[in-house]
Length: 554
Ligand SMILES: Nc1ncnc2c1ncn2[C@@H]1O[C@H](COP(=O)(O)OP(=O)(O)O)[C@@H](O)[C@H]1O
Ligand SMILES: O=C[C@H](O)COP(=O)(O)O
Ligand SMILES: [Mg+2]
Ligand SMILES: [Mn+2]
Image (cartoon, rainbow, N blue to C red; front, side, top):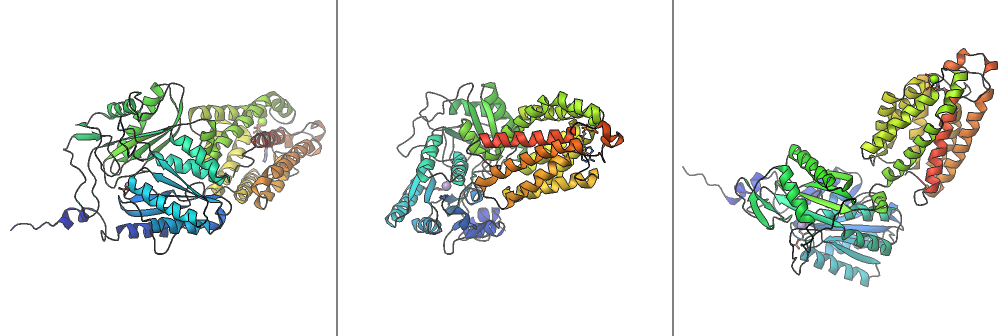
């Protein structure tokens, strides 16, 4: 009895789908219904931010293209990223009508302009271009940037270099600029310049197959294809699978080969952001090994890897393989790549410098009121944080940063202050998980202070660090209602209250901590912990005041 295995069984049933015709629609419905921040545009394969009112006066960003490259592009919609994404059928460009519908929806919601970020494929250039021209005739302030980052072909054809995973870097940059209310022309200029500093190359170990179709190409077991496209287009050479280090080295050599018209010039001393992209079916184990190879290969060439992204960013359905993308960056681009972590880095450096400089003064104050080590404990914390910053990349998430600092301080600082600071940071962190606007910062700081009081047992007036912290926190509660541009003024008032609070401890009777064992008449100097807290606030304020474009941590 012969088995009748039809095409459907061979291809689609290997995929967990319901229907070839509706798989893109069902996928979009699944993504949107699992993310409160997204909504679907009725009648179109278009996903949008659900908070369009927050885009008023800012440039809206639209990307899109064929489906089958998830999470691109719907997965990149959000604050500081895309405003909308337009999905085509699998590996096929979306219709101009849907692109235009997305443009008009965003334009009519009060945005200052619309920027289309398009991967360099003929279909996408034509369809997004057609929609842009139609929108322009309706008065829309619109522009388009095409991303062409493929390093495979040494002499690219007239169609140009394909658009690959480097497009995600551009989403991030354009999103950060739009979030800072930059104009359309400024964003286009900065992004167009950044595109020239991106290179991507892929390697495939197995083909992919469009639902309902046979695999796009054949690869014998044990073979790999270098330089293929994200639709399974052929690359530049087939070879036997080699070790990860060897494959990565070959790829980076090819990507930076000056004899290739598609190469990215890379020299010792350059700084890059690296993206190791899973094309769909590489295991997490393999991805980690390849990421290690890519970082060490770049470091061996004297290249500083400032950020690493490793995961599935621009896939090709179920293709086993990966692509390497790197973008040369300067300080400004890096700040845009991690607006929070760039500022946090400066703030932490400033705090550490202040506490290390205060070491002897705090120890002297503590000798008169405690056990003389308050400066040493703060110095230990500052030194540990500096060492950590040199060894790692500061997380872009304030919640993760606070949790990391809580652990560092708990482990390295010692003394009552070590436990108290760790409590503050650990209690504050969860309030910064989802977002970090002024309201979130106020809640976080309040939660941290409440934890200090709860577990330390002290209260304002007891001659402890709370006498500097609490008056400052009262001021910082105004972050909840102040506009981002007003945050610096709130912080300034908080600093002044912290410094007054610290000085006021001279005249307080100690009711908590070691100082409470010492006769009041001997306590004539301010409390060391309070002086330290005031110095921390001062360091934060002076840093943020100095960063004109970042007067806030939100
Ligand atoms: N229960 C408490 N609540 C808040 N702050 C406290 C408390 N106990 C001590 N402190 C602060 O800790 C500072 C002393 O820090 P440190 O010298 O590191 O700790 P230790 O007193 O254990 O040696 C004090 O100056 C005071 O500001
Ligand atoms: O995924 C496919 C691209 O987005 C567009 O491809 P195409 O130009 O072949 O339609
Ligand atoms: Mg002490
Ligand atoms: Mn595509």
